[in-house]
Amino acid sequence: MLRVALIWPYGYNPGSGMPLSLAYLKSNLGLAAQTCDVRFFDCALHNIRPEDEALQVFLSDFKPHIVGVTAWARESVYALDILKRAKQLDPAVTTLIGGYHATCYADKIMDSCGEVDFLFRGEGERAFPQFLEQFQCSSPDYAGIKGLVFRNSSGECITNEMEYINDLDSIAWPDYDAMDIEGYFKFGYRNMSYHRRNIPLIATRGCPYRCEFCSAPLSIGKRIRKHSVDYLKEQIRHLYYDRNIRWFNFIDDNFTNDVEFAKQLCREIINMNLKGAGFGTPSGVRMKKDAGELWQLMKRAGWKFLVIAPESGSQSVLDSMKKDVKIDTVPGIISDIQKAGLRVMGFMMVGYPGETTKDLEQTVTFIKKSGIDFVSMHNFQPIPGTPVYDELVARGEIEEGILPQKYGHGERPYTPRELQSVNFQLLFVKIYLHFLLFRPTMFVTLVRGANLYHIFRSFIQNIIVGTARTLKRVFQKPAASQ
Image 1 (spheres, rainbow, N blue to C red):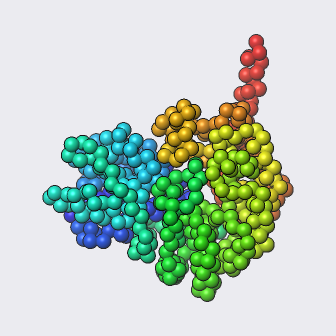
Image 2: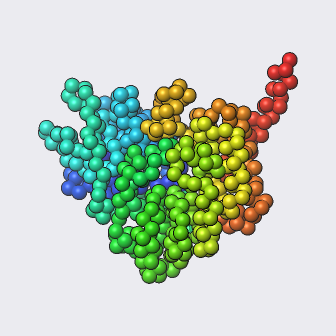
Image 3: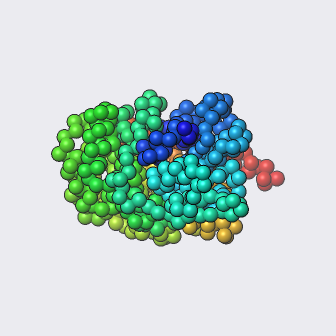
Protein backbone atom coordinates (compact mmCIF):
# COMPACT_ATOMS: atom_id res chain seq x y z
CA MET A 1 0.00 0.00 0.00
CA LEU A 2 1.39 3.38 -1.00
CA ARG A 3 1.42 5.68 2.03
CA VAL A 4 0.70 9.33 1.24
CA ALA A 5 0.75 12.18 3.77
CA LEU A 6 -1.09 15.39 2.83
CA ILE A 7 -0.07 18.17 5.19
CA TRP A 8 -1.83 21.50 5.71
CA PRO A 9 0.99 23.77 6.87
CA TYR A 10 1.28 26.00 9.87
CA GLY A 11 0.56 29.64 9.02
CA TYR A 12 -3.00 29.36 7.78
CA ASN A 13 -5.56 30.91 10.14
CA PRO A 14 -7.94 28.14 11.36
CA GLY A 15 -10.46 30.84 12.21
CA SER A 16 -11.00 31.73 8.58
CA GLY A 17 -9.60 28.94 6.42
CA MET A 18 -10.10 25.17 6.12
CA PRO A 19 -7.92 22.70 4.12
CA LEU A 20 -10.51 22.52 1.36
CA SER A 21 -8.00 21.94 -1.45
CA LEU A 22 -6.54 18.86 0.25
CA ALA A 23 -10.03 17.57 1.01
CA TYR A 24 -10.81 17.75 -2.72
CA LEU A 25 -7.68 15.70 -3.48
CA LYS A 26 -8.68 13.05 -0.94
CA SER A 27 -12.20 12.62 -2.34
CA ASN A 28 -11.11 12.52 -6.00
CA LEU A 29 -8.51 9.73 -5.85
CA GLY A 30 -10.46 7.46 -8.19
CA LEU A 31 -8.76 4.07 -8.68
CA ALA A 32 -5.74 5.30 -6.73
CA ALA A 33 -7.84 5.03 -3.57
CA GLN A 34 -7.57 1.22 -3.82
CA THR A 35 -3.78 1.22 -3.70
CA CYS A 36 -3.05 4.26 -1.51
CA ASP A 37 -3.39 5.05 2.17
CA VAL A 38 -3.84 8.84 2.17
CA ARG A 39 -3.76 10.60 5.53
CA PHE A 40 -4.17 14.22 6.57
CA PHE A 41 -2.04 16.09 9.06
CA ASP A 42 -3.28 19.58 9.93
CA CYS A 43 -0.49 21.74 11.33
CA ALA A 44 -2.59 24.93 11.22
CA LEU A 45 -5.53 23.63 13.25
CA HIS A 46 -3.29 22.09 15.89
CA ASN A 47 -0.71 24.91 15.94
CA ILE A 48 2.20 22.69 14.92
CA ARG A 49 5.27 24.30 13.42
CA PRO A 50 7.55 22.35 11.07
CA GLU A 51 10.17 21.99 13.80
CA ASP A 52 7.73 20.68 16.41
CA GLU A 53 8.02 17.11 17.64
CA ALA A 54 4.38 16.29 16.80
CA LEU A 55 5.08 16.49 13.08
CA GLN A 56 8.17 14.33 13.37
CA VAL A 57 6.24 11.74 15.37
CA PHE A 58 3.51 11.63 12.71
CA LEU A 59 6.03 11.15 9.90
CA SER A 60 8.05 8.59 11.86
CA ASP A 61 4.98 6.54 12.77
CA PHE A 62 3.26 6.72 9.37
CA LYS A 63 6.45 6.36 7.30
CA PRO A 64 4.95 7.91 4.15
CA HIS A 65 6.36 7.21 0.72
CA ILE A 66 5.01 10.59 -0.42
CA VAL A 67 4.62 13.86 1.49
CA GLY A 68 2.54 16.60 -0.13
CA VAL A 69 1.85 20.17 0.96
CA THR A 70 -0.11 23.09 -0.43
CA ALA A 71 0.46 26.75 0.28
CA TRP A 72 -0.39 30.29 -0.52
CA ALA A 73 2.66 32.58 -0.75
CA ARG A 74 2.66 33.61 2.90
CA GLU A 75 2.57 30.01 4.16
CA SER A 76 5.10 28.70 1.64
CA VAL A 77 8.00 29.11 4.08
CA TYR A 78 6.39 26.62 6.45
CA ALA A 79 5.30 24.30 3.63
CA LEU A 80 8.82 24.09 2.18
CA ASP A 81 10.28 23.59 5.65
CA ILE A 82 7.96 20.61 6.14
CA LEU A 83 9.27 19.00 2.95
CA LYS A 84 12.86 19.70 3.97
CA ARG A 85 12.36 18.05 7.35
CA ALA A 86 10.56 15.10 5.75
CA LYS A 87 13.64 14.59 3.54
CA GLN A 88 15.94 14.79 6.55
CA LEU A 89 13.90 12.14 8.34
CA ASP A 90 13.73 9.89 5.26
CA PRO A 91 15.91 10.84 2.26
CA ALA A 92 13.96 8.35 0.10
CA VAL A 93 10.62 10.12 0.57
CA THR A 94 9.10 11.82 -2.48
CA THR A 95 7.89 15.36 -1.90
CA LEU A 96 5.11 17.34 -3.64
CA ILE A 97 3.87 20.91 -3.48
CA GLY A 98 0.78 22.53 -5.00
CA GLY A 99 -1.44 25.53 -4.48
CA TYR A 100 -1.46 29.18 -5.53
CA HIS A 101 2.18 29.87 -4.73
CA ALA A 102 3.42 26.77 -6.52
CA THR A 103 1.34 27.64 -9.58
CA CYS A 104 2.44 31.27 -9.80
CA TYR A 105 6.08 30.76 -8.83
CA ALA A 106 6.86 27.29 -10.18
CA ASP A 107 10.16 28.04 -11.91
CA LYS A 108 11.67 29.83 -8.94
CA ILE A 109 10.60 27.08 -6.53
CA MET A 110 12.02 24.27 -8.65
CA ASP A 111 15.25 26.21 -9.25
CA SER A 112 15.91 27.05 -5.61
CA CYS A 113 14.18 24.36 -3.54
CA GLY A 114 15.89 20.99 -3.85
CA GLU A 115 13.52 19.59 -1.24
CA VAL A 116 10.71 19.67 -3.86
CA ASP A 117 10.57 16.64 -6.17
CA PHE A 118 7.28 17.37 -7.94
CA LEU A 119 5.19 20.52 -8.27
CA PHE A 120 1.54 20.77 -9.31
CA ARG A 121 0.29 23.87 -11.08
CA GLY A 122 -3.40 24.69 -11.16
CA GLU A 123 -6.17 22.26 -10.26
CA GLY A 124 -5.06 18.91 -8.89
CA GLU A 125 -8.21 16.77 -8.74
CA ARG A 126 -7.26 15.03 -11.99
CA ALA A 127 -3.48 15.38 -11.95
CA PHE A 128 -2.93 14.06 -8.42
CA PRO A 129 -4.54 10.59 -8.87
CA GLN A 130 -2.84 10.27 -12.26
CA PHE A 131 0.47 10.98 -10.57
CA LEU A 132 -0.16 8.37 -7.88
CA GLU A 133 -0.95 5.75 -10.54
CA GLN A 134 2.22 6.52 -12.49
CA PHE A 135 4.33 6.65 -9.34
CA GLN A 136 3.48 3.01 -8.66
CA CYS A 137 4.51 1.90 -12.17
CA SER A 138 7.89 0.26 -12.73
CA SER A 139 8.60 2.84 -15.45
CA PRO A 140 6.49 5.90 -14.62
CA ASP A 141 5.65 8.33 -17.39
CA TYR A 142 4.84 11.80 -16.06
CA ALA A 143 4.80 13.57 -19.41
CA GLY A 144 1.03 13.34 -19.83
CA ILE A 145 0.05 14.70 -16.41
CA LYS A 146 -1.27 18.22 -16.96
CA GLY A 147 0.26 20.92 -14.79
CA LEU A 148 3.01 18.70 -13.38
CA VAL A 149 6.55 20.08 -13.03
CA PHE A 150 9.37 17.63 -12.39
CA ARG A 151 13.01 16.86 -13.08
CA ASN A 152 13.88 14.15 -15.58
CA SER A 153 16.70 11.62 -15.20
CA SER A 154 19.18 14.22 -16.48
CA GLY A 155 18.10 16.76 -13.88
CA GLU A 156 16.35 18.94 -16.46
CA CYS A 157 13.17 20.61 -15.21
CA ILE A 158 10.12 19.61 -17.27
CA THR A 159 7.00 21.79 -17.11
CA ASN A 160 3.84 20.19 -18.46
CA GLU A 161 1.09 22.30 -19.95
CA MET A 162 -1.68 23.30 -17.55
CA GLU A 163 -5.28 22.24 -18.05
CA TYR A 164 -8.41 23.35 -16.24
CA ILE A 165 -11.31 21.03 -15.52
CA ASN A 166 -14.25 22.09 -17.69
CA ASP A 167 -16.90 19.81 -16.18
CA LEU A 168 -16.85 20.88 -12.54
CA ASP A 169 -19.68 18.48 -11.73
CA SER A 170 -17.27 15.61 -12.43
CA ILE A 171 -15.39 16.64 -9.29
CA ALA A 172 -16.54 14.89 -6.12
CA TRP A 173 -17.41 16.92 -3.03
CA PRO A 174 -14.50 17.47 -0.66
CA ASP A 175 -13.90 14.89 2.05
CA TYR A 176 -15.35 16.77 5.02
CA ASP A 177 -14.29 14.11 7.51
CA ALA A 178 -10.67 14.23 6.34
CA MET A 179 -10.47 17.97 6.89
CA ASP A 180 -12.05 17.62 10.35
CA ILE A 181 -14.81 20.21 10.11
CA GLU A 182 -15.88 19.45 13.69
CA GLY A 183 -12.39 20.32 14.88
CA TYR A 184 -12.60 23.63 13.04
CA PHE A 185 -16.00 24.39 14.53
CA LYS A 186 -14.59 23.70 17.99
CA PHE A 187 -11.65 26.01 17.29
CA GLY A 188 -14.01 28.81 16.26
CA TYR A 189 -13.87 28.85 12.48
CA ARG A 190 -16.27 31.49 11.15
CA ASN A 191 -15.07 33.39 8.04
CA MET A 192 -17.69 36.13 8.25
CA SER A 193 -20.56 33.81 9.10
CA TYR A 194 -23.48 34.35 11.43
CA HIS A 195 -23.49 30.73 12.59
CA ARG A 196 -20.88 28.56 14.27
CA ARG A 197 -21.63 25.57 12.02
CA ASN A 198 -20.58 27.05 8.71
CA ILE A 199 -18.78 25.60 5.72
CA PRO A 200 -16.96 26.90 2.62
CA LEU A 201 -18.40 26.05 -0.80
CA ILE A 202 -17.15 26.62 -4.33
CA ALA A 203 -19.69 27.38 -7.07
CA THR A 204 -17.35 28.68 -9.77
CA ARG A 205 -13.70 28.58 -10.78
CA GLY A 206 -11.83 31.07 -12.92
CA CYS A 207 -11.46 34.85 -13.05
CA PRO A 208 -11.68 36.85 -16.28
CA TYR A 209 -10.46 40.11 -14.78
CA ARG A 210 -6.99 41.61 -15.02
CA CYS A 211 -6.20 43.08 -11.59
CA GLU A 212 -2.40 43.22 -11.55
CA PHE A 213 -2.08 42.48 -7.84
CA CYS A 214 -4.11 39.24 -7.92
CA SER A 215 -2.91 35.69 -8.53
CA ALA A 216 -6.35 34.15 -9.17
CA PRO A 217 -6.30 34.23 -13.01
CA LEU A 218 -2.83 32.66 -12.95
CA SER A 219 -3.97 29.82 -10.69
CA ILE A 220 -7.54 29.01 -11.71
CA GLY A 221 -7.60 30.39 -15.24
CA LYS A 222 -9.42 33.30 -16.82
CA ARG A 223 -12.46 31.44 -18.12
CA ILE A 224 -15.21 31.05 -15.54
CA ARG A 225 -16.51 27.52 -15.13
CA LYS A 226 -19.56 26.74 -13.02
CA HIS A 227 -21.05 23.83 -11.15
CA SER A 228 -24.62 23.09 -12.13
CA VAL A 229 -27.36 24.36 -9.85
CA ASP A 230 -28.44 20.74 -9.21
CA TYR A 231 -24.92 19.78 -8.07
CA LEU A 232 -24.83 22.67 -5.60
CA LYS A 233 -28.36 21.96 -4.37
CA GLU A 234 -27.46 18.36 -3.51
CA GLN A 235 -24.27 19.45 -1.78
CA ILE A 236 -26.15 22.02 0.30
CA ARG A 237 -28.91 19.54 1.10
CA HIS A 238 -26.36 16.96 2.30
CA LEU A 239 -24.54 19.47 4.48
CA TYR A 240 -27.75 20.87 5.94
CA TYR A 241 -29.52 17.59 6.76
CA ASP A 242 -26.63 15.15 7.27
CA ARG A 243 -24.03 17.41 8.86
CA ASN A 244 -26.19 20.07 10.54
CA ILE A 245 -24.56 22.96 8.68
CA ARG A 246 -26.46 26.22 9.02
CA TRP A 247 -24.29 28.71 7.15
CA PHE A 248 -22.88 28.28 3.66
CA ASN A 249 -20.07 30.48 2.33
CA PHE A 250 -19.41 30.59 -1.39
CA ILE A 251 -15.73 31.47 -1.24
CA ASP A 252 -15.11 31.81 -4.98
CA ASP A 253 -14.47 35.33 -6.26
CA ASN A 254 -17.02 35.33 -9.08
CA PHE A 255 -20.24 33.89 -7.69
CA THR A 256 -22.28 36.75 -9.19
CA ASN A 257 -20.35 37.14 -12.45
CA ASP A 258 -23.11 35.26 -14.27
CA VAL A 259 -26.11 37.07 -12.84
CA GLU A 260 -28.66 34.62 -14.24
CA PHE A 261 -26.79 31.66 -12.73
CA ALA A 262 -26.70 33.36 -9.33
CA LYS A 263 -30.40 34.20 -9.57
CA GLN A 264 -31.31 30.63 -10.48
CA LEU A 265 -29.36 29.20 -7.56
CA CYS A 266 -30.92 31.71 -5.16
CA ARG A 267 -34.40 30.76 -6.36
CA GLU A 268 -33.66 27.08 -5.81
CA ILE A 269 -32.30 27.79 -2.33
CA ILE A 270 -35.47 29.72 -1.51
CA ASN A 271 -37.58 26.79 -2.71
CA MET A 272 -35.56 24.38 -0.53
CA ASN A 273 -36.93 26.19 2.55
CA LEU A 274 -33.91 25.48 4.74
CA LYS A 275 -35.06 26.89 8.06
CA GLY A 276 -32.36 28.75 9.97
CA ALA A 277 -29.87 28.57 7.09
CA GLY A 278 -27.83 31.53 5.94
CA PHE A 279 -25.47 32.20 3.06
CA GLY A 280 -22.46 34.40 2.43
CA THR A 281 -19.88 35.37 -0.15
CA PRO A 282 -16.93 36.46 2.04
CA SER A 283 -14.47 36.78 -0.85
CA GLY A 284 -16.66 39.45 -2.38
CA VAL A 285 -19.08 39.80 -5.29
CA ARG A 286 -18.64 41.67 -8.55
CA MET A 287 -20.18 45.13 -8.34
CA LYS A 288 -22.96 45.02 -10.91
CA LYS A 289 -25.15 47.94 -11.92
CA ASP A 290 -28.87 47.29 -12.38
CA ALA A 291 -28.69 44.02 -10.43
CA GLY A 292 -31.44 44.89 -7.97
CA GLU A 293 -33.35 41.65 -8.54
CA LEU A 294 -30.22 39.61 -7.75
CA TRP A 295 -29.64 41.45 -4.48
CA GLN A 296 -33.28 40.91 -3.51
CA LEU A 297 -33.07 37.19 -4.27
CA MET A 298 -29.86 36.88 -2.26
CA LYS A 299 -31.60 38.54 0.68
CA ARG A 300 -34.55 36.14 0.42
CA ALA A 301 -32.21 33.15 0.10
CA GLY A 302 -30.45 33.94 3.38
CA TRP A 303 -27.70 36.49 2.75
CA LYS A 304 -27.33 39.09 5.52
CA PHE A 305 -24.63 41.23 3.95
CA LEU A 306 -22.50 41.40 0.82
CA VAL A 307 -18.81 42.04 0.50
CA ILE A 308 -17.56 44.20 -2.37
CA ALA A 309 -14.00 45.20 -3.24
CA PRO A 310 -13.64 48.81 -4.40
CA GLU A 311 -9.99 48.55 -3.22
CA SER A 312 -9.39 52.31 -3.54
CA GLY A 313 -11.27 55.58 -3.63
CA SER A 314 -8.87 56.95 -6.22
CA GLN A 315 -9.67 56.35 -9.87
CA SER A 316 -6.00 56.85 -10.67
CA VAL A 317 -5.02 53.97 -8.39
CA LEU A 318 -7.82 51.75 -9.74
CA ASP A 319 -6.61 52.39 -13.26
CA SER A 320 -3.07 51.53 -12.22
CA MET A 321 -4.36 48.28 -10.70
CA LYS A 322 -6.34 47.56 -13.90
CA LYS A 323 -9.27 47.01 -11.61
CA ASP A 324 -11.81 47.94 -14.32
CA VAL A 325 -14.05 49.74 -11.83
CA LYS A 326 -15.36 53.30 -12.08
CA ILE A 327 -15.35 54.62 -8.54
CA ASP A 328 -18.21 57.06 -9.17
CA THR A 329 -20.56 54.12 -9.86
CA VAL A 330 -19.86 52.36 -6.57
CA PRO A 331 -22.03 54.48 -4.20
CA GLY A 332 -25.06 53.77 -6.39
CA ILE A 333 -24.36 50.03 -6.29
CA ILE A 334 -23.97 50.18 -2.50
CA SER A 335 -27.34 51.93 -2.30
CA ASP A 336 -29.00 49.31 -4.52
CA ILE A 337 -27.69 46.50 -2.32
CA GLN A 338 -28.85 48.25 0.84
CA LYS A 339 -32.32 48.81 -0.66
CA ALA A 340 -32.61 45.02 -0.86
CA GLY A 341 -32.11 44.86 2.92
CA LEU A 342 -28.47 43.81 2.86
CA ARG A 343 -25.57 45.51 4.59
CA VAL A 344 -22.43 46.20 2.62
CA MET A 345 -18.83 45.61 3.65
CA GLY A 346 -15.92 46.71 1.47
CA PHE A 347 -12.34 45.60 1.04
CA MET A 348 -9.96 48.55 0.74
CA MET A 349 -6.25 48.40 -0.09
CA VAL A 350 -3.71 51.12 0.63
CA GLY A 351 -0.06 51.55 -0.30
CA TYR A 352 -0.31 50.44 -3.92
CA PRO A 353 2.66 51.27 -6.19
CA GLY A 354 2.45 54.87 -7.34
CA GLU A 355 -0.19 55.81 -4.75
CA THR A 356 0.13 59.36 -3.42
CA THR A 357 -1.11 61.20 -0.36
CA LYS A 358 -3.84 62.71 -2.56
CA ASP A 359 -4.95 59.20 -3.59
CA LEU A 360 -5.00 58.16 0.06
CA GLU A 361 -7.13 61.17 0.96
CA GLN A 362 -9.57 60.25 -1.80
CA THR A 363 -9.85 56.73 -0.38
CA VAL A 364 -10.61 58.05 3.11
CA THR A 365 -13.19 60.45 1.66
CA PHE A 366 -14.82 57.63 -0.30
CA ILE A 367 -15.02 55.44 2.80
CA LYS A 368 -16.76 58.19 4.77
CA LYS A 369 -19.15 59.40 2.07
CA SER A 370 -20.02 56.32 -0.02
CA GLY A 371 -22.67 55.05 2.40
CA ILE A 372 -20.87 51.75 2.94
CA ASP A 373 -21.65 50.03 6.23
CA PHE A 374 -18.13 48.86 7.08
CA VAL A 375 -14.70 48.37 5.53
CA SER A 376 -11.87 45.93 6.08
CA MET A 377 -8.57 47.76 5.56
CA HIS A 378 -5.67 45.95 3.93
CA ASN A 379 -2.06 46.81 3.22
CA PHE A 380 -0.94 46.19 -0.35
CA GLN A 381 1.13 43.00 -0.43
CA PRO A 382 3.13 42.04 -3.54
CA ILE A 383 2.33 38.42 -4.45
CA PRO A 384 5.03 36.46 -6.31
CA GLY A 385 4.18 35.85 -9.94
CA THR A 386 1.65 38.65 -10.31
CA PRO A 387 2.28 41.42 -12.87
CA VAL A 388 2.80 44.13 -10.25
CA TYR A 389 5.25 41.92 -8.34
CA ASP A 390 7.32 41.29 -11.46
CA GLU A 391 7.27 45.00 -12.26
CA LEU A 392 8.47 45.98 -8.77
CA VAL A 393 11.28 43.42 -8.99
CA ALA A 394 12.30 44.70 -12.43
CA ARG A 395 12.42 48.28 -11.12
CA GLY A 396 14.50 47.20 -8.12
CA GLU A 397 11.85 48.33 -5.62
CA ILE A 398 11.55 44.90 -4.00
CA GLU A 399 13.86 41.89 -3.91
CA GLU A 400 13.05 38.75 -5.87
CA GLY A 401 11.58 36.17 -3.52
CA ILE A 402 10.04 38.58 -1.02
CA LEU A 403 6.80 37.20 0.41
CA PRO A 404 3.57 38.95 1.45
CA GLN A 405 2.67 39.40 5.10
CA LYS A 406 -0.75 39.53 6.74
CA TYR A 407 -2.95 42.05 4.98
CA GLY A 408 -4.53 43.71 8.00
CA HIS A 409 -1.42 43.97 10.16
CA GLY A 410 1.44 46.42 10.19
CA GLU A 411 3.99 44.45 8.18
CA ARG A 412 4.63 46.07 4.80
CA PRO A 413 7.19 44.46 2.47
CA TYR A 414 6.67 47.44 0.17
CA THR A 415 5.53 51.05 0.58
CA PRO A 416 5.38 53.59 -2.27
CA ARG A 417 7.84 56.44 -2.01
CA GLU A 418 5.35 59.23 -1.29
CA LEU A 419 3.68 57.26 1.52
CA GLN A 420 6.85 56.33 3.42
CA SER A 421 5.96 58.64 6.31
CA VAL A 422 2.33 57.50 6.63
CA ASN A 423 1.43 55.72 9.86
CA PHE A 424 -0.87 53.08 8.32
CA GLN A 425 -1.70 51.49 11.66
CA LEU A 426 -3.14 54.70 13.06
CA LEU A 427 -4.90 55.37 9.77
CA PHE A 428 -6.70 52.04 10.10
CA VAL A 429 -7.62 52.79 13.70
CA LYS A 430 -9.11 56.15 12.74
CA ILE A 431 -11.19 54.57 9.98
CA TYR A 432 -12.54 51.85 12.27
CA LEU A 433 -13.31 54.44 14.93
CA HIS A 434 -15.25 56.42 12.32
CA PHE A 435 -17.64 53.49 11.84
CA LEU A 436 -17.88 52.90 15.57
CA LEU A 437 -18.77 56.55 16.22
CA PHE A 438 -20.96 57.39 13.23
CA ARG A 439 -22.52 54.01 12.42
CA PRO A 440 -22.49 52.27 15.82
CA THR A 441 -25.57 50.10 15.25
CA MET A 442 -24.39 48.90 11.87
CA PHE A 443 -20.84 48.50 13.14
CA VAL A 444 -21.85 46.30 16.06
CA THR A 445 -24.43 44.30 14.06
CA LEU A 446 -22.10 43.52 11.19
CA VAL A 447 -19.04 42.76 13.29
CA ARG A 448 -20.95 40.76 15.92
CA GLY A 449 -22.87 38.80 13.34
CA ALA A 450 -19.94 38.15 11.06
CA ASN A 451 -17.61 37.43 13.99
CA LEU A 452 -14.83 39.42 12.35
CA TYR A 453 -12.46 38.80 15.23
CA HIS A 454 -9.44 39.19 12.98
CA ILE A 455 -10.40 42.83 12.39
CA PHE A 456 -10.47 43.52 16.11
CA ARG A 457 -7.19 41.69 16.60
CA SER A 458 -5.66 43.87 13.89
CA PHE A 459 -7.40 46.88 15.43
CA ILE A 460 -5.70 46.32 18.79
CA GLN A 461 -2.36 45.51 17.18
CA ASN A 462 -2.60 48.66 15.09
CA ILE A 463 -3.25 50.74 18.19
CA ILE A 464 -0.22 49.29 19.98
CA VAL A 465 2.15 49.36 17.01
CA GLY A 466 0.93 52.72 15.76
CA THR A 467 1.22 54.37 19.17
CA ALA A 468 4.69 52.90 19.67
CA ARG A 469 5.88 54.22 16.31
CA THR A 470 4.42 57.65 17.00
CA LEU A 471 6.14 57.84 20.37
CA LYS A 472 9.39 56.70 18.79
CA ARG A 473 9.20 59.52 16.27
CA VAL A 474 8.43 62.06 18.97
CA PHE A 475 11.39 61.05 21.11
CA GLN A 476 13.74 60.76 18.15
CA LYS A 477 13.05 64.31 16.87
CA PRO A 478 15.15 66.15 19.51
CA ALA A 479 18.01 63.74 18.99
CA ALA A 480 17.85 64.18 15.23
CA SER A 481 17.99 67.99 15.52
CA GLN A 482 21.12 68.03 17.67
